[in-house]
Length: 181
Image (cartoon, rainbow, N blue to C red; front, side, top):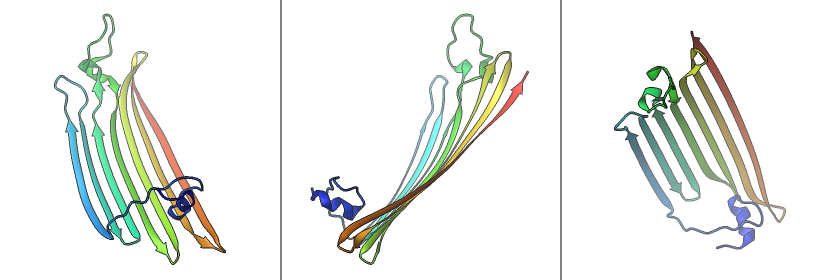
């Protein structure tokens, strides 16, 4: 563990602690994973794919990942119902179908005696459901989108260790309904 003051060199707040891990000067990795699930007696199915890339080239680093997933809806007729309860069978969802796509990129670069870190994140999530509302069946589409970023600079100026950070985020949510009598 390094001295508490060392955290500013690595983008941390003063007073935090840093562990020094010695990494290879050059390193690259690429990996991916696909997973899925299917119930044996009714329920939701899922499929997820993820890709990652990491690179170290001396003081420069790059990390990227992308993920996409799909979960099917859980329909009312796939679960036992209480006596006297009627949920319109497969027309009604107990849990919505969900599609998700996400991307993450992070890079570190030297700028002379200074270091810069840039991180970008984006995600889109869409869910669709069908519910019973009074005597009507209602379809709902929800879409959420998020984009975020951060930029950090650290280095020495006038005998001081200086750190500056800026973050930005933007989100949008939309919802649409369709009612069937």
